[in-house]
Length: 83
Image (cartoon, rainbow, N blue to C red; front, side, top):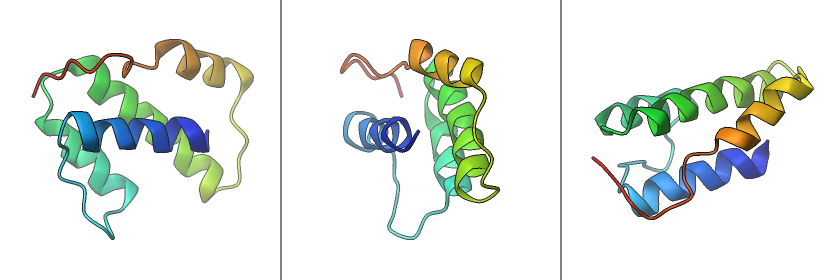
């Protein structure tokens, strides 16, 4: 999950120029994605962040089906960006 989250955030910062600043929370990062026109990228990051928060703060392991869906749907494969 950590790799998915960090990889997604890195892609959004480097390819989509998401204005993430040091000290931004997970919620701040989700709010920043609202500037993207690419709906799949916005929705995915929101879902991924929700799962990340459950793991990081609630110490709840994700369901296998949720992880599989996140792996299969990762929308940051290309460098194409729509802002």
